[in-house]
Image (tube, rainbow over all chains, first blue to last red; front, side, top):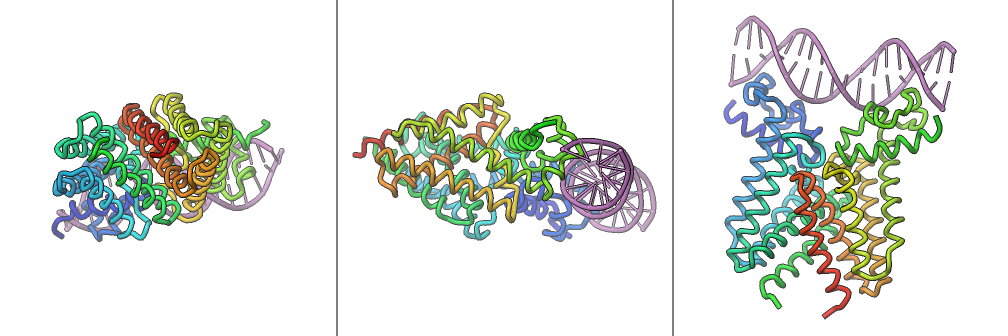
Length: 185
Length: 185
DNA sequence: GTCTATACGAAGATAGAC
DNA sequence: GTCTATCTTCGTATAGAC
């Protein structure tokens, strides 16, 4: 088998998003990915924490990459970030959430710190993009935090209620807010 | 022992908020509350799901009760809802989150539905209060959803980063937004 | 209502052969 | 790199005595 490790990392990320931290067990990852049993501790000598950490990093990198491709306007940045979560909800038919959130509510210690670091990076990155788009730094940081927190919360609500309605409502308000930031009164 | 069941329900709610769904095991609940081992399945014949469901209901009721006491203005309602989460973060020194969120990201099936129902009730209740405060129904429902999702997301971020900063930023923006709703332009 | 004992399975992790 | 076997711990749940 080739590329076993990355396949396991991706599988772990998907399971985190769908079933939470306890749902992302080695048994489930192996079943989902078809990876060989014997190679778990070969690829992840430090066990589950190492696998989960790698999954968080993969999710984080993929997110930052897609954000980097956006046009530098507040509306485009906001829309692009929201689209990431909208796509996630659609692809998984409302059964998936955010892997970083899943770790954040169930982990303690180093793993929790790692999830926190991902949120920090996302916030800094989004704030940087908004600053490039002409938003004042302080306002950019505040809105970046709101954008992430409201999106994450809305994804949780939509998954729990099995309805896009909460996410769509929040999406609409955040988009309106981004227009306000783009043309300050 | 008297009042064993409510004590266990409260303990379960606290453990859900601090350690997630898997952290709210019977063993941990018994240790935390000092409840007698032998009475677990006496009080919860349907096992863990029944205990967790009761914990969600307790959290939901306590939340709705405190919201009902607020003055009927958009700013007071928003401030009161934010204060619930601010108090939670302070009391637990940033180690606790929301029990409903903890269940929402880790559960499937009936338990997930129950968490979704709590979010629905909260949304409807908040929207009702805002309507009483003079906000148009559609706008009230949208803002209620934003208020819940952003608060929940901000609590998650603050817990993961072990810093009040994300919550405080979001809190500031939501308060500003509530003023905008109170005096429409 | 509460006790002990116990069954059962899942999960994380390790050892050593191939 | 991958295999099997095994160990330990933990969590859920049941049975039956007191």
